[in-house]
Length: 402
Image (cartoon, rainbow, N blue to C red; front, side, top):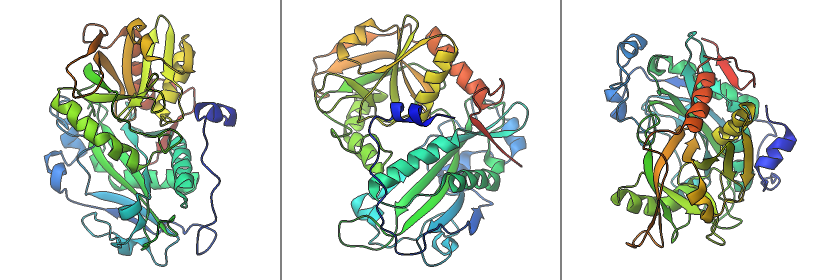
């Protein structure tokens, strides 16, 4: 577990104190509903439906083409709090949420979410990776939005229930790089016209089997710096996991995709001289025996990055979380993205343009298109730990009892 001091170090700007906004009891309702689909719909039709089928499917074909962009319609466990009625009345049989057309989430982006994964280990056990940290981050995001959040205990219990209700969709240990992705989502759900924090919040946990998010497992990618676009404002919402941050990245990300790049790297929005993060993951670099990652108030604190810092130190590397100037890009041995979706995605080519529309560019090349040795060592350690292949000396995994 991360100590309070460590947590404060990682998150240099804390959320405001929770306002008193609720119009109901001072405690959350207990879980009232867990829902399970017995059939697949939409993008899940291509997925194998039983563990036996999963085990018989090779890594190259299993979940090929699966990504976070394909939402799951098969599952949820659902809590509803600050509401007046059981949440099962809000969840239809195909996984759609009944919501007022005037809900704050629809008009004022009163919404935050998390992402974590469940893994089947070599020993057959099911593990969640650091769900308590996801709960804490959701609570910080909720405080920023001024809405109520589930307790850590409720959050973890919800995630366990979502996994158990959809255990047949959990990829087997043999499906390397595959897992059951969980998307805990908290939305302002009461009808409102005025711009204010929602007095009612709905918390749901969605899940879907996934493969690697960017490219394939450890496939090096080409990325581009978007100097003329920002994903967050100075002193804004960049350090919280709210949907608006991702919306701000979509236009520049679409442009980058048209240019053949897999991801966009953003600079600090105040001076445009320091590295912030990618559109959906943190930035890290290796120089000699140092693990270097940016420190900024507009970066989302990545649980994977925080874990990599701990593992790097455990493996004898020097860890530096500090402002990283763009002038340093030419000095790094390895560069990569890190996050829940990818763990680590190595960067092969990084292109710096005055603007995405400009033909002028500076190109940085890292390695030969393969994952660098130190990044690979960190990746293997995290993956082995998540899947129970090595001892969990940090106490990060939470077992899901079947």
